[in-house]
Image (tube, rainbow, N blue to C red; front, side, top):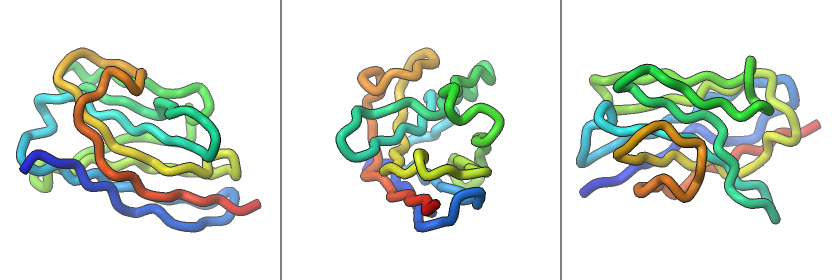
Length: 123
């Protein structure tokens, strides 16, 4: 079965860190663009950080530059989102997504989605 499964969310104080994981099964993520998106209550999906392993290109939302980073473990077919210096405005459900195409920060460009993991940042 082709799927993405996120984990690692939780409650953290402002200034803290979390690392989210996105485990891919049924396909090799190296052939796809992987994106992390988030959706806060009452807001639309926002592209946070997207990465193309084929050419190394990366998209960052301005709001997370310098604080969030992406890495991967090919052996585990897993992509990670490292989130540092978290702020209350980072509170959202975070989703991992994949697309078979070029790099994009747009929600509608992605075909495969995980179910999401909740990140809550207290002030």
